[in-house]
Length: 413
Image (cartoon, rainbow, N blue to C red; front, side, top):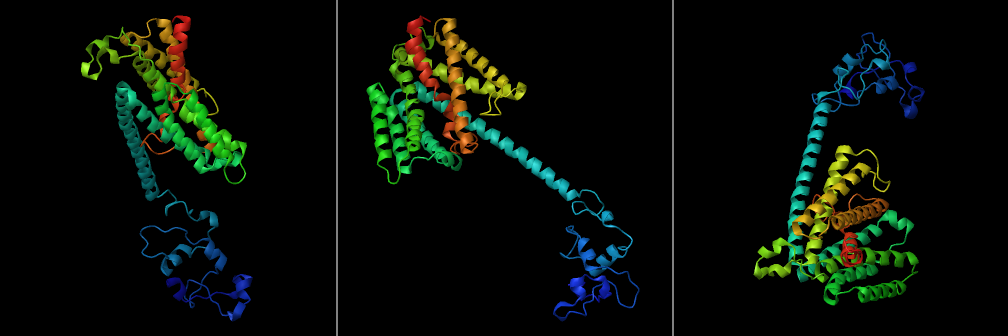
């Protein structure tokens, strides 16, 4: 190296004490950047190392500068102070280098491209899921039940993975894996049993009994937290989604006032295919989509007041916009599909759909916050996991079914 091969010499009294004492016999150590015949200022090793450049430009041919460049930079070392030396975060002219600016511009462009690609994925997959779900709802029967069972299976697996996460597991013992798998299979079968038997009482009681036995017979030390988390998973992932089967398939009375039934093909069921359950399900799903969309747009445009500490990004203004959009869409569809007949019943139905939507969203946000994750999974590109997409529908099916089955006949709405 150039620095090591230069003829270096200086007075030993200018070196640090550890060097001037000559440890291991190095008494003849000579450090300098100038030839010995010429007069030179005295430079200590510590002072030299302090002002060596910590970064090198792309113009340097080697990692270390040559002896001539060091001599030119430090000939006035005795006259300058450390404050006059260039900062290692600055360029040679004391300014931010163009390389740093170009790197920041490239990172900004990459970030913008990433957000644009994420939005495109979100829109494309959202439209695909919307049209696919619409076709499944209109088909009904075993097609609707099988699709819902598949969604329930994926959602239950994501739920138990969240429960098994480190942050939740620190405060609550998660159930064993074989217990969570048994619960996921039971949740998968519950929509099918609901369609076949027409009710959920026996299946829910029997499922809870099986889960309790599995928890009690596990190896080690069974805990109540195992049973609590598993039973809640059964309720959240299996029992509540099964109300969509009861809403869509058990309300088989034809919606006689629905005009679209007159033009429905006979091969696809004709007028009888448009039942109260089909109309109520379409209105409920459409109002939930409107609530999420209006809440997102309203929150971005006017959101200032936080709604709750569970989800800091949700605002009171966004919730009000979501409520308004949900009610408006429900009223419009009720006029198109001629169900429900009265305006007050349509308003109440819209409010119930919004209440179930926002409560399900907040509950899933609470679970993810305790788990310390942003998304429940990565199954759907641009959207996250299954629970991230269906959280607004978990409680809404039960509320809609109770409204149609109980409130409408009881209050005559």
